[in-house]
Length: 117
Image (cartoon, rainbow, N blue to C red):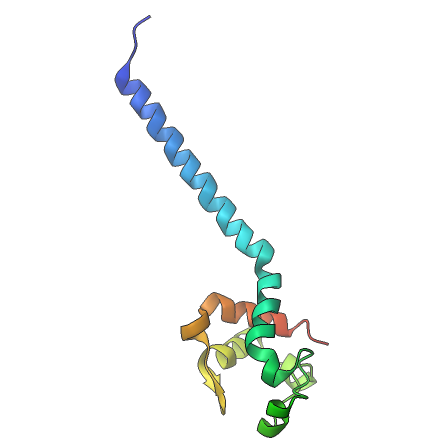
């Protein structure tokens, strides 16, 4: 039996590409699975000091800034894109967070706000 080096190199290259593809796919799925937990942790770290853990705005900073209750019908009636825009770009006294947190995190926070009740 004759050993074919070119064929072996081709198979090794194909195996490497397959392995990279599998890792890339599993990594992208992992971020989806952990997105809600990450958004909750980010909300707690970045938003709760003003908006409150429950979104009520019932904190000294929230009262001072006269923040809306994130659980209110008015806030919950906004589209996902409207919530994203406020988080990402800022509005009024609220700074934008897209540059520091990234667009994906801002989108996850907009989705997280829907869970506040």
